[in-house]
Length: 492
Image 1 (cartoon, rainbow, N blue to C red):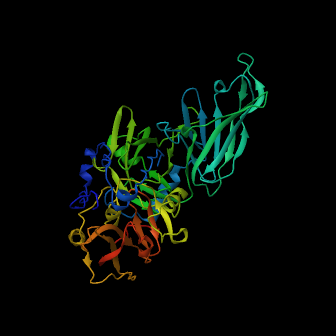
Image 2 (cartoon, rainbow, N blue to C red):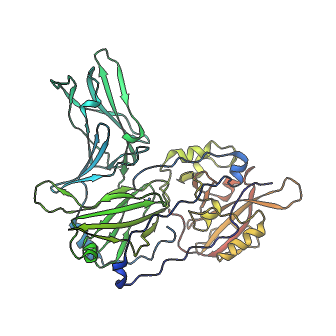
Image 3 (tube, rainbow, N blue to C red):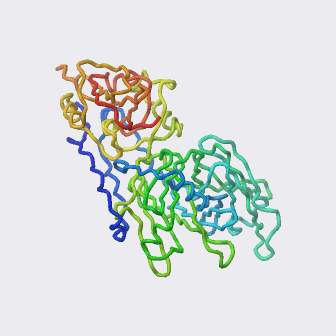
């Protein structure tokens, strides 16, 4: 008898109605959505074998149905982009006691970036761009004879060192004077930059300082840009994908219309999966006094666990404040799954399992982390913020999928038809020997004929064949449902 718990019905959230231009003045700040409550019980696989809940990441960077895309003419996006300035480099300062992160905009000035809660990466970096690290001398022991910055890419990457001192000492404190350490990120950088401070005393004893807040989240080369133009249109260029970069191209003239003047300060609020938002300044502090600030286009790394992102904006100028938040609903976008095996731990977690004897390393890739936010059946319905489980019998699933436009086939036909969206459910015979099938799992066929499966609270994977998951945990495929192919849930 299975002890899984699920929801008896699934009802999709209707899209918000389109707003009219006359409503712009009513735009206001809306709080981020709350994350679903943690569920104490999971599906067949975890009920029998147990699973570890994935740790919650705190990276900076990536709702229900994605709002209809309104394409801008190519010329509009092209004229907006040159007015926005991307970072030319980044800085991380290890202070006493606080840390600070900065983005440099060549020839323009700097942007102070948020540093997070301290439970994860505090700093930001981009592939192929320099990172400069500075250190408060008071963090260095008087006995230190050498101070180095140690860095490497995670996952993988070889350790490298950069001096953090020139060997001179402060006459009043006796401590080594620290100097900036700069290194260039690889052009294909992905994941994290792990940084630590290594000191060596006169006896040769080495001490290494590191904690998770020393890391920098890397915005990789693959990116999507969301363009917010002054004619109140929004364009998504590329695909917003977990682990990739999210760029925000925002025209401050939108806020000028709301507050009646050009804002001197603009900030974006970015929330992933309904988490508390991160405030990212979009205006550059000029290097020269009296020089007007320019607009900054941040490059944020979308967290690997992200399934949705919400955005809204605030502008201030001469005592006036305006909010651009899609009329209080926020701008909401789906986040597609990560690139294949973006995090090696996803695959390693599955390979440690003894429940799937047919699932060998060459037959699948990991495309999403462990999470209790959604399960396998939710995934087949295009939902990643619900736990969907209608019952234990095949008839329960017949009704669930019928409500979503699927029809059951008379036989378990796993052949690929590019015009059909196919879902396969798995089942086991009950231990009572009655012969009745107990449903255990659901998988979705993608446009190439492969399958994607969310393994209970464990990773989301793409596997070559439905039979890859056959075995003592899920049993075998017992029914196939089809409907005309719609926009794919998964990304290739």
